[in-house]
Length: 371
Image (cartoon, rainbow, N blue to C red):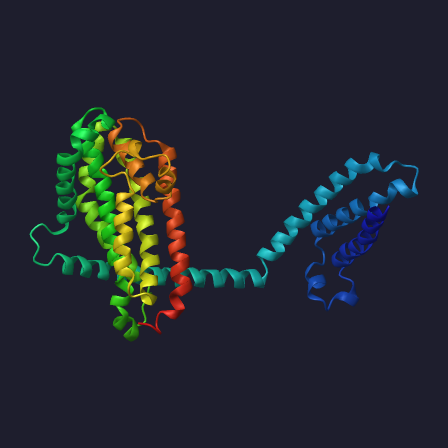
């Protein structure tokens, strides 16, 4: 009884409001909401139907008519009223001054973000160019050193472990060579990019004290510089290897997804270690050990099948493992990409990137006191 009675009581002022808005009664003309809605028949009808639907709920208590018999009528009336009212309220809001002001502010915000993004991109381009020029000034091979290192290490691992582990790769030394190479390029990229990102904020502390720059640009520029040399030096060889094994352009294109995950993981870790290094100057020595353990704990030169069951749970939390497994499946299996592995690598990348960004921005306000 209480709910229908409340509906009836609410319906009376709502019905009165609908009539007064439409007629524009003189006593309310000074109120803008009433004055603007004078003659707005759809709004008046919509509000009136909602009011009637509310008031009809009490029919079963004060009349011989069963309330259940008018339930569907109330639903139809109320729905039509809500649609009419919602449509009119939407039109009123879209043509209101507040909406136009909101749109104007949104456009100004988008324009400001575009300007900041353009400035960020220009700074990134300058810093990446500077990093590459300084790193390979006078170098004979330049960016192709990123390819030569894993090739030499692959040859070394093959000479030592190739015969022992070939049985896990279809009794093929060549398969072991390709598997070791894919793992090494991932580990080398991660190690080089994050180690360089670690010191990027502290190394540019003097510049930050003189010029107002986005601090995040420095670790990102280090990751971007290593990503550029990876795309120029290593990716073409990986793409050729993938196409020869799979004979499918789909696999070649899918190869970009785990590599994108690798960039996300490296960026997240780069943010994390660059922020922590501002506060803990012994971090580089500790991070070398972390990278070494991560490299040993990743199935790069040995098959994952030989890892004891007691140790596998610790390897599963390694963010590089799903990336390497996904790249190997795409490049070496000769079958279509396994999207479960790709999704696992992307999830790993997003988690690490989110953690790195949260840590970096939470510590960012304290940087300038220590640089």
